[in-house]
Length: 374
Image (cartoon, rainbow, N blue to C red; front, side, top):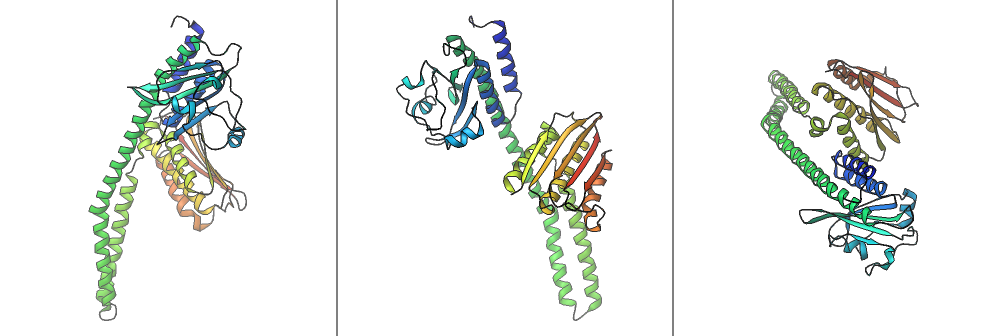
């Protein structure tokens, strides 16, 4: 790149490192569009990923506020210049985007665009998406050197995006394999025991009026089988280690769990995480399971509007806090002790400490602290 000075190379290097550090596809896309706008000093940037027929599977922007997006309206369709650039791997650089023969129109609330640079993200001949940049902040519009910088970033972005897609696909396959394993174990162990339990209960019911002694014996068998089934089911569930936990760590695993719950519940479920050191597998699982249990309790009992999960470093420890703005409770109430006792037992087994702060009408915070040392 003859037109690229040392400072530009440093900026490209930073942008590439930021993109390749992400694992989820959406994080990669958002990092690409933000890096492109910053690198080329553009006022607006967007990234479109082709979807079925004339739609975009993803359309992300940088430089446009949420309020502006709401005013602009729904996600654009693949019409005009935006759609044409998803079919042609050649870049487009214009002094005025409206001069392109494929230009159509933009909504009334859309910002006014002038100079324009579009760069497809291509991998093995497939256009994975296209970067659109507009309105360079310095006079003169986008240059040939800008085009080369964006071409370099798009090349690295294609690799990062492909890797992220492969990572997510492998993770999905791991989830499917784990589900099949659980199904086999449930069928082989618990399902058969529950079948025996039902037959024994039926026998006990038939004997109640005719032979009370035999009925009691059958009920004793029912109790034993029920206890064994519960223990085997517990062992299966306890043996499940979230696929994300081993690869990404407890922070990323909890964040993804929170994202799922936020879509599934009317309450707002939020994640506020900071980078934390890796823990031993036992401690990471303890943090994850306690977080799950605290979230479950908040969503089931708290009548909250917002539940927040925070994971952060705390000196030589890792701290988990699950906070809700719900009705709160008295932690000394016997009816709430079983769930708290289970979490405290898990915390002690991991060498950590669990505290619960709550009062009627004042919300609840469950705070776990575990040592970061292996």
